[in-house]
Length: 545
Image (cartoon, rainbow, N blue to C red):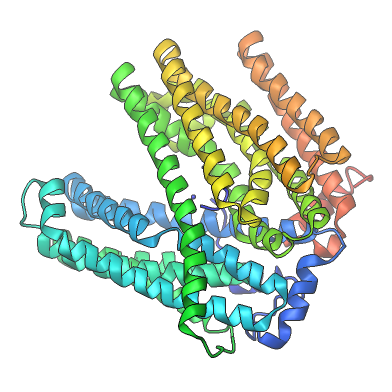
């Protein structure tokens, strides 16, 4: 839940996804070179982009929910078919694949989005073609190198992971999954950089769905021996889905010289290495916090924190994923225009506030019910730490749009420095808070790290682009943050019943306020279907909507 670029609704049909497209995103034909001026115009139009932000949030958030549901089914099936020991084996092989992909991928899946979006924003058809060709070739080369790395080190990996070299052949087979996944990442970066958000949502859902079907079938017939083939099948389905939609993007490949390819590839890897490094930082902090809890409090506290961490990021994660999927390439395309960039950041922050506020208040209010529903009454000790994590995720919604300014402008060294500062601060807060406050200290440290991050980012982005929060954001921020602080404090100052009533009232009021503000900014026909239906239901009761 950290780097800006760097993871139970009904399933949406293809028709729902198509209806949610903006007019400039016709999915029946690829984005040709001739269509680039329209893409640039859409990226830099002076009109507000609230409707596009809401559509992107609905698409990406909806696909994320579906993926979570598919993942739950897949996990349940694997657990029943493999048993505890076999499922542990499944997790070990998955960890090996993920680690290899992180090392070999070099952050190109994130830097590729930035480079493609910048090329589209420039309106230079030749540059778009150059960047696309180099991104595809680089992804294939990195995939092959990652697979080769795993094959060469298979005996050592088997010995380190399993205590013997008997699994070396299975580790070698796992290299095929690494290759497929890294090539798929490159194709996804192309689609995301082109802002084909509906296609991206479909890729995620279809890849997960067919991957789940084939992996469960393989494990059903082969049991433990089907674990690695099932992981390969998941990667293959991801590759097939991304290929199916990336082939719609018709780019005229230019005549390339070796120097041009080398220069573009170097730019990809240069920025990608910053993403890769910060990804390792984020993973390292999460790992270190769990180790601190284990050493200072115990195994149960680690489990409580993990459950709170998962639930705390569940709702806000949809909003943050939408930022990465659509807002990031849009901002990159306008990175040269500070006024446009600042307006886009303020709009994204405002929509993030309005979408996140009611969800955060609801989570704060109904935390015991949420934990009991997702886990069991044995996990109620996680209630307090979850509330602190909710405060931290609220700050994430505020800080993420600002962080994208640094990424969009390609300031790799500055991006690395800010992420390193956050890492050091996070580890320091965690060490002190967990040592003296135990489990709750982990949540307080998470909140503190994002308070630090916001105070660090604001003056930096002001220097980069002259960014300041708009008057509307200050007003909305004061209203929603005041409600969040009041509800959070209520559970420490009031009786549980009184605090629950306050939280319920605040959730309803914030929800109505958010809908009212969004309906003023966005015309009814540009709102996603669920919002239109909700407004239609509210208007007879609240004529002002």
